[in-house]
Length: 338
Image (cartoon, rainbow, N blue to C red; front, side, top):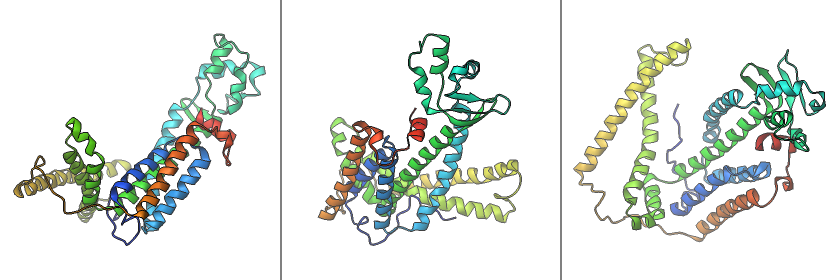
């Protein structure tokens, strides 16, 4: 499978022509906004902005759909972790299960493992001494919603909602990163990072070396992906099956992919270092530029829209309460934000 993540895709779009310095700062600010607690309203607005930016970039929608594949894997991993780590103390459950006055907030069937710890458990804290046995039990609860419990495994609504939210955030982050790398040539991205980090030269940080390292790393991503594809085809022609068979056989087959890929990566890095040395490359030498950046009014307008969304996300997350959102789901909000 030919993956386009990290690969420059030449098209004639306004995002491709945008000044890479403005583009880089705008994308980073939007990625920061994605991980702010802005509620469903904020995420819908940001998702709309990201989709619009992707459409304006004239990138392939099939590529955007393929980005769901790693997100599904990440969602599965987060959900599995939540089932092991996201649960209340069993000793508190045993205590609450013996007191009928608390059952309007808590219910649990020890035989089936099915129960409910709702967001309204915070009401139980009113008038309860936190140092008492009941207070300690109540304070030790985590709102899970409906859940199924078996030994140390807790499959709950909170685990699912939290994993979905994190998957949503990661998908937006990957999409924004794809827009940046797909519409900006590696050399332009290197020069943009160098210009943005230029003030660090005053404290002795080698900005040019740092930017060239990032550029080479981004450039090697599609190269290594292509190399992995060639190795898989070569190993498949020798009888190694990466798709079928037992899990143990797949792990062994994966070893035959990883080791040659590592060897090839080190070989490519060595060849690149020899090539740069043969051409007289000196990172400490004073260098001139063939490429000169010039911003346009369109760049300023797009950059201003992106920064405005970033500022609105900060204000929304820190000033306005979540209940003022036009899309507000109190039950799920309390499960996720606790």
